[in-house]
Length: 133
Image 1 (cartoon, rainbow, N blue to C red):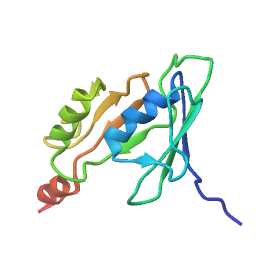
Image 2 (image 1 turned 90 degrees about the vertical axis):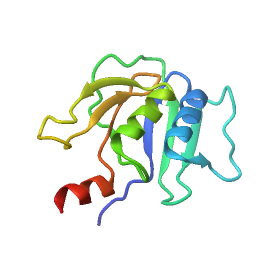
Image 3 (image 1 turned 60 degrees about the horizontal axis):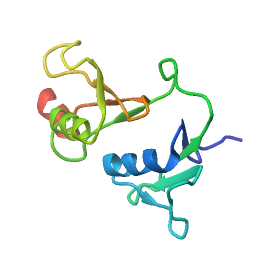
């Protein structure tokens, strides 16, 4: 017997606002028949391509330390650096730049969403393929 990941949950202060922000970053949408609205304490969004769900739940405590679990994002189109610029333009904050830590053109950028939850942006598949050829 095994388990599967039903969805990924993010504790937050404002479920609606954070779910709306992540919809812009990931291209996710509200669950059909269950729209998220201001004031909702739980907001679920879903990838129209993969079916992966993210659930945002309001909790009373604030984030105080580094995440023990985070999302690693890979651009579907464009480059890592273009995606970093786009997401920063949406309101993310750059936390750590590891782009060349393991050699030129390798690595990632650590960002935080508007509530301080860390996530990374990796190189796109095209960038990875170009580097290995």
